[in-house]
Length: 161
Picture 1 (cartoon, rainbow, N blue to C red):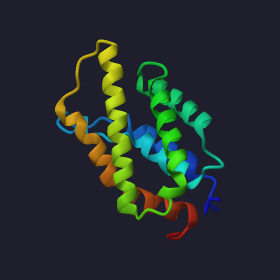
Picture 2: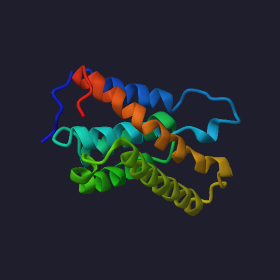
Picture 3: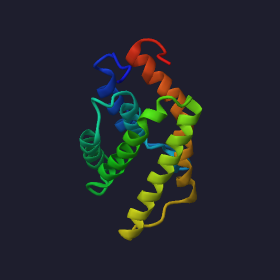
């Protein structure tokens, strides 16, 4: 059972903000470090709202991301579905992890996501990404604790842990 008794506007707003943060121009040197914001929001929703967010919604959000970001149709959908599947499997354990331990798990999942993305781009014959591109999962991992606390407070009006 979820602790969520939250406000209905939080989830759509989070998805919108994450999508916008994925397309906002960044300075060229830090562009490869952009975290996969939508994956972080999806991870939070899978952990906190399991009855409201599952593989089907992850797929639809992924298709939306594919269209917004102009990527191969189905790429983000595949990535978010796999992330959701793994998190659903480990959700019961992750809810009891301290935030720093959750961040490490999220970091591992984001690194696996980067590996999948690199493999997809390799198979499609696209140019390899710069080495700094592999730093984005680390940025996402570092953002997880404050993001989780922020979303928890927005949804509950207080810290629920």
